[in-house]
Length: 337
Image (cartoon, rainbow, N blue to C red):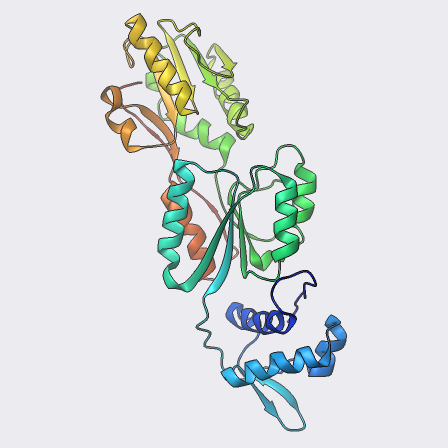
């Protein structure tokens, strides 16, 4: 069993020891009948006082978790842990889609976990403060690792989290050698594979646009995948950063839009110019919503399954798994294409 005792943690040191033993049992690294460190050994190895360790072991004895055997030491007695796991869920921002992930994650875990939600706003300092201050307070850190300004610094902070406590959500960190669980999108290949399913409809248009916002950062792999698809199929293409009411929209254009404001402006322009979506102009929007099913006879959508992502992350916790799971991503063809 390994543990770390946080000096700055708000959790008393004796409870950190209790939580470490309990968590090791839950994960299966401590089994029934297994001997654990003596009070002196744990005190010396982790630089905590004997009084602290004695208090922790007394709590574990009262719970029946450990049992002392005279002349031999302490042994694991009960491996049935009913205490809910503590989870820190760390999103990069708030959105409708994040809400779907959160709700399915909470629903799937049920009473098996207590979940705290925090937002890091792409800020490495917030990540550092949360990890340094609460590393010993949670059984799991579920993190959306979107840090575009200081990715290497963010990675070094994330690496301080034991891999058995870490789950990457929505995005993997390439070339990081992190041996942790993940539920992720493969942004570059997802857009290529999904749009391949709609090539028959895309070929009726003469120019292909993707609207890649700069105000709110999105994974650059999306644009890479877009460009690769266009190159493979000899599509004339352009990357733009927004759609305003002054953006030229012409018959034969097809647009992929990520932000809802760009989608709204594109629809307004089509209405003003009497351009019919799905006939004169193609529209593909990122991320499924109920409104897109009915708007303009249906908006074609590129989307991952956000509810499935939350469920899969919860399953990793329930099953104590370090599996890496690629989340489903599809093209939903509707009238706008």
